[in-house]
Amino acid sequence: MIQNQEIVEDLVGHFGEKVFAFEEPYGLLSFSVSPADIIEIVTYLRDHKLFKFNFLTDITGVQFPENKGLEFCAVYHLHSWKNRVRLRIKAFMPAEKPEVPTLTGMFAGANWMERETFDFYGINFLGHPNMKRILNIEEMDYHPMRKEYPLEDATRNDKIDALFGR
Image 1 (cartoon, one colour):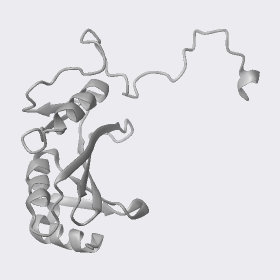
Image 2: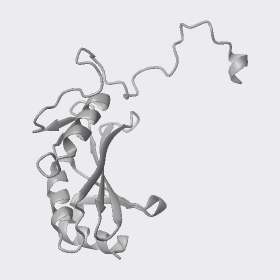
Image 3: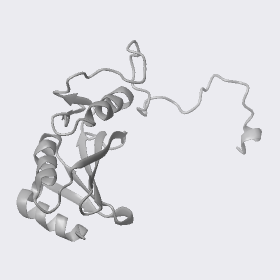
Image 4: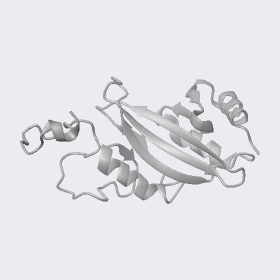
């Protein structure tokens, strides 16, 4: 079985500073890349003779409003069936231009995952064959998972704080 350290050493040896911020929360190897490098690095991991990360488990988005200049993150989970190993890749981008290249040319399943991430977070996957909303109506002029709205409606008067432990 491949160890995370083996993967880290190989990636750093091959890509240098293009891969960074390595961590292992709960044993899951995670690292960051620039959005411009995502295709090159995922292709390398997929086609690697030993690693064979040939299954894209998930793509999602995260917003970090306090992370000025890199507020949005596209998160990719890859799985190597052969080695029974998973890893997470994060690509951070600015709120003014939340864009990352599409992986639809590599993984057919990326199609709907990228559309869902676009729908909820507004991250645009450049080169996607059908980048439009998948779960919300086309007329929506916002992305509902963005942290741009208050958690509660301040105009409501039917909530008594005492009933909610406040």
